[in-house]
Image 1 (tube, rainbow, N blue to C red):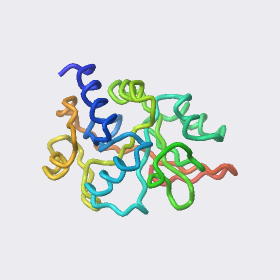
Image 2: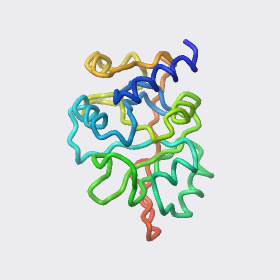
Image 3: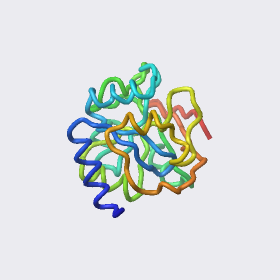
Image 4: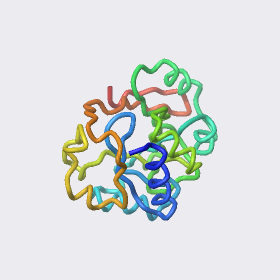
Length: 188
């Protein structure tokens, strides 16, 4: 299936408040428009996940990142510049996203992606894309499309028809950065 067709199909579903199953730069993800509270709620329901467990947002560049955060620590840019694998940063005081995505400490995880499908989809959306692993909460993260449970596949509004053979066993590194310059590695 051609990437542009898949971007179009996924975008049409997302703009109507739907949720998609899609390949990311790491593992398969369930996603939606990060500013749509109802769509975010659909993902929590599908994953059978408590809202206290936040999900991350993907962005495709500086402009989108600044639409989510007023203040971005200088350290964030340095980490992304030198990262050798996908890196999610947990940053303070996001704005413009569904409140359910924001953790109790007023932070949210964000990852800048260059992967063509995600990047171009967000270019069409002009908004951050929710990303959470394609599994029921508490179950193992699937390493490939064939490991995703039928319950998840049936529960989304659209399954992106790309990279179904890709194996990915490495989720992103997660680093928490606070506005007062504290750095904490959550997952290597």
